[in-house]
Image 1 (tube, rainbow, N blue to C red):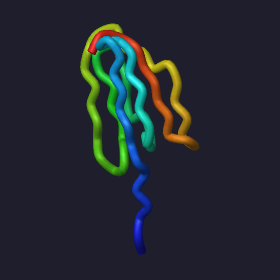
Image 2 (image 1 turned 120 degrees about the vertical axis):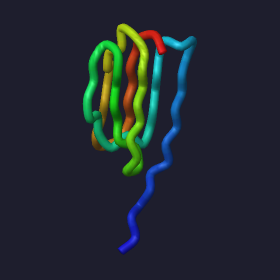
Image 3 (image 1 turned 180 degrees about the horizontal axis):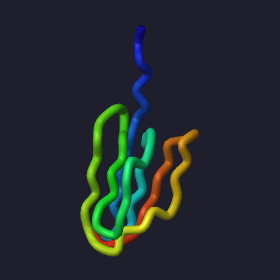
Amino acid sequence: MQTETRQSVLTLENQSKISMTGVERVDAFSERLIQLTVNGKKVRIEGSKLRVLAFSEGSGNFSASGYV
């Protein structure tokens, strides 16, 4: 059985806005850490005043703000 791999793109604007595609799920989040699963791999975003702005499980679109 072949697994489909989504393309993922990470955009960081001025070290304060994060956008990412291909996100499967948000595993955990706090003001200092956001943990995501992207194509079966774990992704950690560390910073301060982090806040999840949006996440769509269907499209895989994710956005957050804070200082990275």
